[in-house]
Image 1 (cartoon, rainbow, N blue to C red):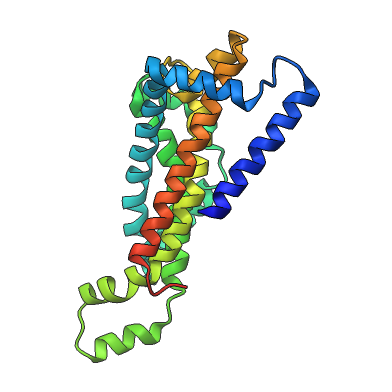
Image 2: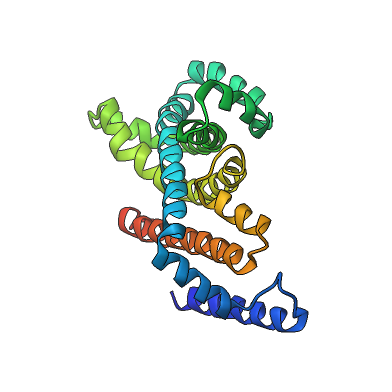
Length: 242
């Protein structure tokens, strides 16, 4: 926590120095941006757009994680399943899914569903590969030991596979969270008037730079909060992991 606080103070100091040296309207000081963000929070507009984006991100992560967890564990433990699922993933993973946004909008409309689907589609592959590789990397001696002691497949899942995967799951959540926000930001600049991406780009188009930076700062703080929550959950559920 102290190191995080120091990093925040250091970055804000660099920002203040840069704004002083540049002395242009497009780089306001962090103090003026902080005042603008407070004003926008009191008005409720910033929190409305940020809340809309956070809902989309969380819904997309949940929608992608569940099937990725099931397929990843299945592919990591059953060779026949891996030979079917992984080749499909290898073919589709390099395709830039953001290019599918116009098609997704045509099928799912301009509301939340299309944006959630796009983000979920992109992060699914990251989740799947991390979980599949993590499952395949578990030492099979643990499997044999559990079966020798009379354990069932359910016991294998609960007492061996999931505990071994949890650290990798938290790591992949950190990575996919950044990807999810980046993709959503782009998706929210098309055919919508809600979300932090729209808020930031609308502020830019209005030449309201302090408002634009307020949106960026709010997004950054939301990401920092997510990372703090993930760190807390990992310490809680992965106490054996150093």
